[in-house]
Amino acid sequence: MIPTVAVTRYVTPLREGGSLPGIVEADDLGTYVCKFRGAGQGVRVLVAEVVVGEIARRIGLRTPQLVALDLDPEIARYEADEEVQDLLNASTGLNLGVDFLPGAFGFDGTVPADAASGSAPTGGGVAARILWLDAFTANVDRSWRNPNLLLWHGDLWVIDHGAALYFHHAWPGGSLLTDGGAERFAAQPWSLDDHVLRDHVAGLPAVDAEVTALLDERALAEVLAEVPDAWLEAVPGAETPDDLRAAYVRFLTARLATRHWLPEVAVR
Image (cartoon, rainbow, N blue to C red):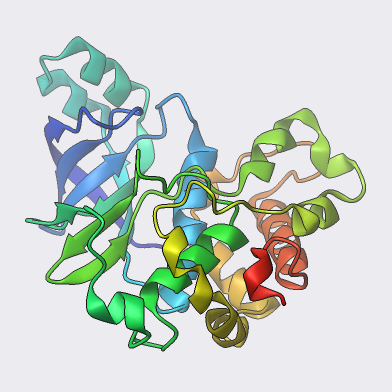
């Protein structure tokens, strides 16, 4: 699983985030953006962050390293802001830490030359690779309103994937007990109309061919193995963490086997 480190100090909230993430320091001397399990979106958002982030890494995209942050309730005693104190108290245990990239800039529409041209670490162009990732994981949160991209040391980094993998939000209601869920996700189209990198769609066919060779059922199982058990809460039809991992792999493998979700330019 992703490494576990202990939070030693809560530094400051990031007020621009709807779930009130915060900057924390940990006992590995690292500084992290902490996404709290006690925030309104719940632990499934943390699962999506790990799954999509690790898929991104496997297909050659830059994304910050992830850790599980063990939060002691004692940390909350030293926080004067009542809203933050309540969030810390509700988030005892494992939270998600995203490596803080000091000095990074928010995406302003300027795509680095290698990100547009196809000289990405594994070829194909980073911009088109990001489009592929978002289409595959059904991520709807990379628009001009909220690009979720950073420029750091001249490279494009992908962040904030909690809005992806929408299907798991229906699992507590029993959707895993209904036949055909994975197949419905596999066939669900994805629209690039609002995507911040939609102008790079012409690179999708080449990227699709390259990325498909990097992912399979085994690779997806390895990705799910990175998710801590504590975030894999039992739902009807999947009572254990391993049951949940298998369900995610089943849904993602089914989608990988189709191309209904790719914009038309990539499947012609």
